[in-house]
Every structure is written in structure tokens, then in C-alpha cells.
Length: 262
Image (tube, rainbow, N blue to C red; front, side, top):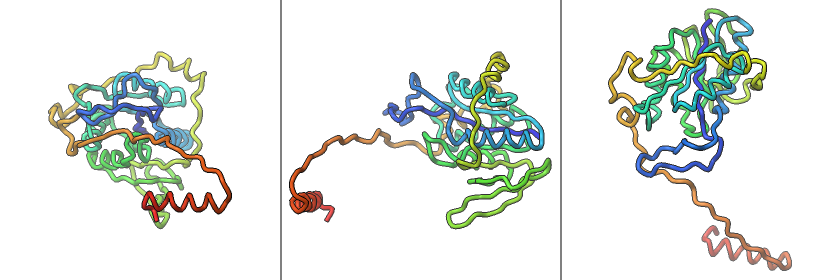
């Protein structure tokens, strides 16, 4: 059983600057971490490996420093990992990102099961996983909250829908997007850190892909463009009122009326 987990390095803080020209986050020089939802996908993969055997690989897309989360995955028990990195991939929207990752997966090899976190904390679109599956032409199930049964041929999962919980069975190869709290993610192991300190992390660039057309990647390959993006304004204004309960009630009512809330 060959299992692949798609992981992403995301900002570890909400104080991130935005490039006004391109509308993308400035990720250089900020603290980063593995996307929390990807930790649940990673834990799911490792438990499936423990149950039915096989190998677990990870792949990520980003700048060279994104190798850090691959190293973290190694410390959790992952067997091999790869980084998709090329300046020509910068500024990709969800569609171009999914296409780029699908090309990277094809380069890594064939997998029975591909797992993704439900969404990322810096994008929150929940679209990349299913789009990867479409590009790879394999079935997929989103919002997975429980693994009911797994074998070498198929997997049965619970899918969280808006009004119902659906039970789905799918044969390999397939892709699942994993929701939070399916399992408690394990902590990185210091022992595994020492064991995997020199383990290779393969870097995949545009020249390694079958499709080398630059127009299909990055800003050039993005079907959508961010017209404008900006951090929310911070309002720390406050007023302190004193008086009896009747007086404060009147002040609250008048203030709400002044702000046209009532």
C-alpha cells in the first residue's frame, strides 16, 4: 500500500504582510508551521500504515524553507518526502496549485491512496484536494471524519455533509480530504529526528514535469486573480461608562441608535 499525504507550510502568525501588486502573502522571514489540517491527514496515513502495512510519503509545494515540514513529517514516521519548488510556480491560485501538485505526484510515482487536509489555514478554500484528484482522474471523497474500514483494495469512510453523515466505500486509487479531530496527531519523535536527520528530500522543479509549459503554472496558469487584498483594520477604541443600571441602559440604547443598529 503506497500512501501519499499532501502537506503545506503556512504562516504561524496572523500578522502577515500582503504584496499589493500581486495580492499574495509575503511569506519570507515569518514564522511558519505545518498546516493543522494536514496533521490530521498525516496521522490518518500513519495509522493506516500501522494497520495494513505499506509506505507513507509526503509532498509539499513552496519555497526551499518548506523542507522543514517534510523533516517534521519524517520525525512523525513518514518514509520519504519531496518538495515542489520553482519561482515559476509563485502566485498560483487554487487551480494552478492543484495542477502543479498533480504534476509533482506523477513525478513521485504511483500511489494507492492520497490524503489531504480538508483545507489550509491561509487559504480556507478546501478546493485543492478535490482538484488534484480531478487532474489525476481518480475518485475522491471530501470532509472525511472517520475511517470505518480499510483493506488493500478499498476503504470505507464517513463523510460529513451539511445535514447528514454519509458512509462511502471507494476502491484505490483515490483521494480523501481529512477533516479535523479524526485522530489526535502524534508529536514528532526526537529519536526519529536523529534517525532521519540525513534523509533525502527530493526537490522537483518545472523541468522535471512532463508538462513544461510555463503558462500552466504560477500567476500565468491561474484562472483567477486577486483584485485587492488587505489586512482587516484594527479598532481599539473603547468607552468606559459609569452610573446606575438605568443610566447605563439609556447610554447603551442611545449609542446603538447613534450607530443605527436600532
